[in-house]
Amino acid sequence: MASLTQTSVVARRVIRYSIYAIILILIGRLIFRGVVTLYRRVFPEPPPKATLGFGKLPKLPFPEKNRDKKFNYILELPDVSLPKLPEQEAVYYMPPFETNIGVEDDAKNKARSMGYNQDGKVIVEGVPNVYIFQKNNVPSTLTMNIITGIFSVSYNLDADPSVLVGNPPETGLASRKAAGFLSRAGALKDDLKKGIYTYQYLKQSGGIFQSVSSLSEADSIKVNLFRQNYGIDNNVPSVTPDMPEANIWFVIGAGRGNEIIAAEYNYYPLDAGKKETYTIITSDKAFEKLKNGEGYIANVGENTGTNIIIRRVYLGYYDPGQYTKNYQPVVVFEGDNNFYAFVPAISEEYYGNEDSN
Image (cartoon, helix red, strand yellow):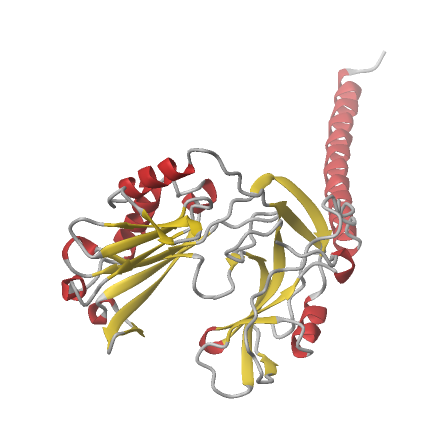
């Protein structure tokens, strides 16, 4: 029969070895996890195959712009080299507009909600879809396509220059005024509610609005509203044919009530639930295409020479401001002095000859 001393020694050994075993197990688990993590970094799992559910995509509807000048592009990027783009990205379906019998009444109600006299009239005989509406108390005109809901606002500054006396509202108030105007008309869609605002201070000089650097210098403020970010990770911004101008913008004056003295609303809905993935070209290939004249130069900006400094390269969704069947990504080249150029981001084999309209 074992003595108490022997039993105590055995018990202590069991406890000690149990502790050693637990420590070894914990260390082993940490080493295993580290090895797995390192392996996945060195040999990442390939992404799922692109779904390609829309088949061949229509070509992007880039506007025709006379760009005879040849540019020399110089990369001066934050990370020196061109960024690594994702291997694939989402493409979205954009449903066509459907007409209904009540579109004229709907347009008149929308005009009234925006503060205009609902007794609109056809702007041009033979073009029955475009109406103009006037305000009773100020020289403001609303022009609307009653089928698409696209509209613009203009203001007769010669008849009422007081709207440019003083300083315009600050950015927060200006964006709320623009959003409220759209909301009253039922035009602040879900992806605009989560949209991105940019601003530009303006001052009229010789009948032309020019950009100024501060609120104290300005007599008006321009508010640009872009769609929310989309994409697989919801981190791809919207870009337009006239960057840095959005397809939806307002110029808000400084005078009484901060009148909207100009506006454009070119919005076409997309169905975020109907999307497919497509393969993306590399940034190196996109840059070669740009240098070979295969891109679209949205804005030369204030650049007067042929040398263009490129500061940023990233994916964006091209929002053309007109109906197109799919909302597609482009590779954006953003440079000094408001230079913007786009290259289609989808691999060439997935584009057809089909027009986008």
